[in-house]
Image (cartoon, rainbow, N blue to C red; front, side, top):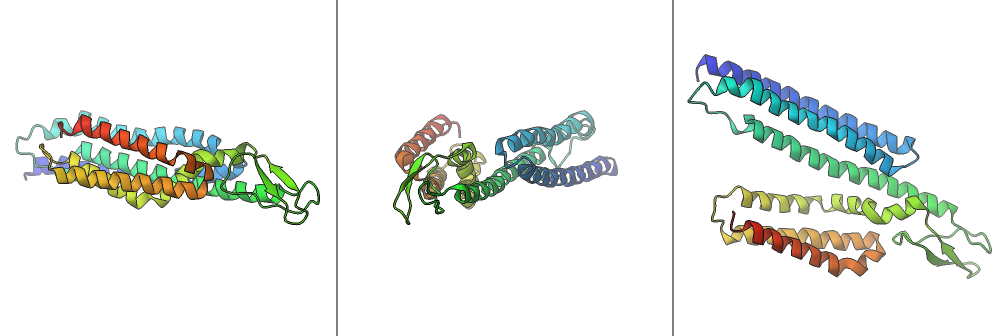
Length: 261
């Protein structure tokens, strides 16, 4: 490779290294900010999510800046050389895709950690505040039920009604989903690899790739729904419907893309 071509490539490589470092530093700062805010806001999870959305937008701007720099400054120089052989990881599209996947992975992990902290705090607080209306003995709530339910006092046998506050009721939604998603992360990554293998093949795609993706797809979602039932009793009632929904989504995806791939 001649010196004239090597110089802009080296500058581009150094630029991408600095961008990746800045990107990782931004993620670390975002994590610290969101975790601190959860406590400072008295565990207002959705207020933290609003902040995260704003931070995420700023982090996405880093990726947009890479594309802009490539299109306006780098590619015009490199395109002058007809025998350009740029390493795959140095292509703008590959690098920005790497940042996108990294951000998605970070977001799943951040939401899971925030949700676990929120869950632990709210469950502990609810147990501390709940006592028998007759003998005032402390009562343990059903930590996998997030609606009003009856609790019998072991001391006086009185029946008490536990009515969840807003934060407690929130656990039964996205909070538990985020926690379970982290538990199932290895299966999620396996599913994503199988999907990527399909997308990276030239058509026609061998049936074995589709079978592998289908197996990993249903393994992930079935495991996810089973794990969710352990934390949310009411999720049992919709297990079959949830699994059917994912089956329908898969069949739609396969029908739409099988011929394309």
